[in-house]
Length: 381
Image (cartoon, rainbow, N blue to C red; front, side, top):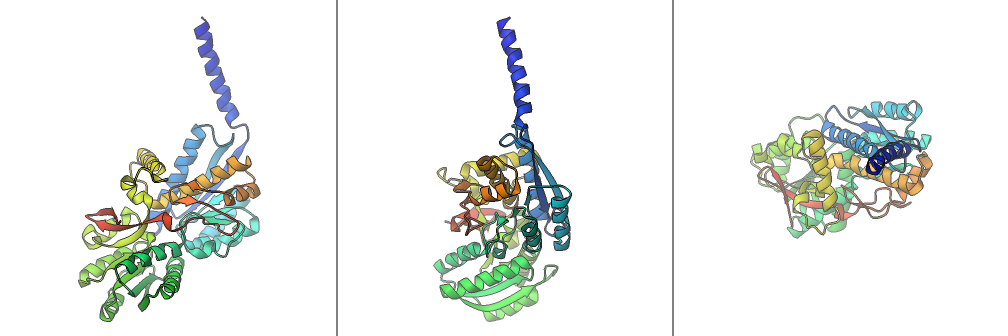
């Protein structure tokens, strides 16, 4: 009888504990992702990751007694639409924080809205201008593009590749990367011998590559997000170019290899987040355990491997959760302060240490150099 009473009491306690878990109210998280359109390879895993994390957190009782609610809109990669939806999230949906947008151009367009309305924005795009100069209400989770550029140039220096040909896309991400590479190249003693560009919707870059072939650089650096880089990779193969080809972190997902074709992509080198090669990281690596758990959870939820891009939303969620735990509040001002105070926060993209002077909080350790080998990523040591 006593045992039965104890079981009933435990059940009642569980019910009341579950109810009490959400006694502190609801935290509304806005999401702006390019779920459809050319940048869907970024936005789709970001959306799925945020939804997965919110669901999991609620099943465990929320965060600091708060239930979580994700209000997510598809921007289709359009900056004008992103601004309209950001306004809707703030004015109509009353969110306390926004995760996204997926691209640099969208993020730059949305920043004035976040700053004016005093709502923290955690961008999932890499352009350095998103957070430099520092803006009070704006943060981002991908490492700055100058970090990726420096990682490439340091690797090239080891291989005595000093004459560089650039081939960059004419959008926000490409323009920022081009600017950072040229500045760093000048500082580090490299020479940019060709500076070619292509449009986001261009479907053939053989003209630019033919010009580059005539100049005979030591290597080509392509900066963009798919499908352009995949097209360029195919064009390099078609032209029979033997010049080493480097890509930016903007293509650090298996989608790039799939679009370019494993044969054409063979040997391409790029900086990538550790998620791409987590299975060969030493167990002592601070991120190894979390990366393994994220990939396993994503595979269980969606039947596909987790991507670096989905990881940007994962990082944003962790920054928000960490801020809630620090401040015990869902108020935008408190969340902003908590995000800025993140220190040594282990996540997918790296170990974040934010400050009033740094709203990205990542350094060179956020990337590993990888090479496409037999249709997969190989860690370059």
